[in-house]
Image (cartoon, rainbow, N blue to C red; front, side):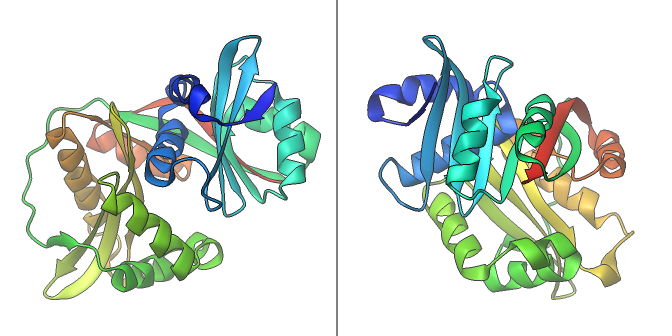
Length: 256
């Protein structure tokens, strides 16, 4: 059974967000930033019997899901059709099940959790990110950001989370030039999630991506939380392993 979230269901939604910490943190952060009743962020709960099986967060055509193996893919697929969802982010088994129902293309790589030692590194060059500066870096860094990010939507959502203390945005400067960026894209009570780590093309292969990642890990550790992320693809996961991250399952992204 899949229902739209009500105030009475929030404890079960919160529990379901703990089943998968990256997309679960995304959903819980959005709930805390937007609350119920905001048209820009909608929330759903999937139950198996009386138990919560999945927490779902829908915004800007993207459906994010934190679920366990009990979640029935059929009502989720029906929701995706009804709402004209263009992207579904979830665990790989559920992604594969939804692809059978909806068709479309998939991408997949690793969920990762930090297992390394506490980090202490210089914060020189890191400044709170200016939205226009960061957006320019992202647009230059990867085709995904060119095709998936609208400045107004992206900046408004991120500003909402930053204002609530649930996200942090930085860019890295070298000799006065903004050369890279990184973000704590969501936080819950247990973890902080790294994301949108990017370096402009002319400064790649200089270790700056690792430097940005370690800085964000340090920021999350200072709050007493566990750093997590999703690797964009498997080769990137190998680089994160060198920093101290370890794989902990696979995520799937479906484009119906």
